[in-house]
Length: 157
Image (cartoon, rainbow, N blue to C red; front, top):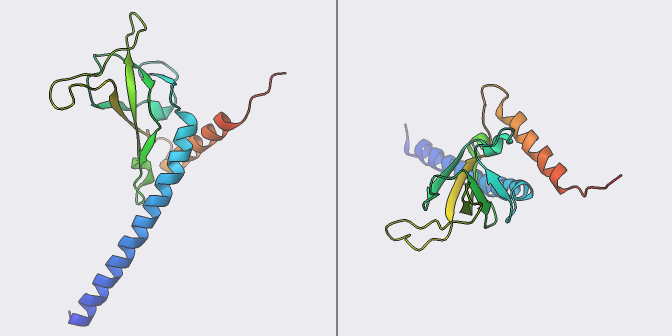
């Protein structure tokens, strides 16, 4: 272990880190385009509905009070937190308004503490699930195909 070999290892690590950072930025922007075709502001999400696509299986409330509802109205553009070394671990995030399942009216996401005046809640969802069953690459391809299908104009016969 010489000084020269340690400096070479450090330089190699910095180069790999820069490549990973670039790949993460590219992956994030591409996955955001895909997810924004699938989940648009004004769209209603029902967490407990049968037949949901797999990118709606794992939705968690990260901030705000969802008041126990499973129905949300998307209020903001979708953002993606991508992981370049493991794209299957990437997640989507958005602000959403909780909807009462009894009355169908919008509720406030207010809670105690510094976020006490929130009108929305912050949702987080996984892009891929069931990786043991189908594999990450296959699921990412299904997400892309669904986004392409959602973006195509529909013609009536």
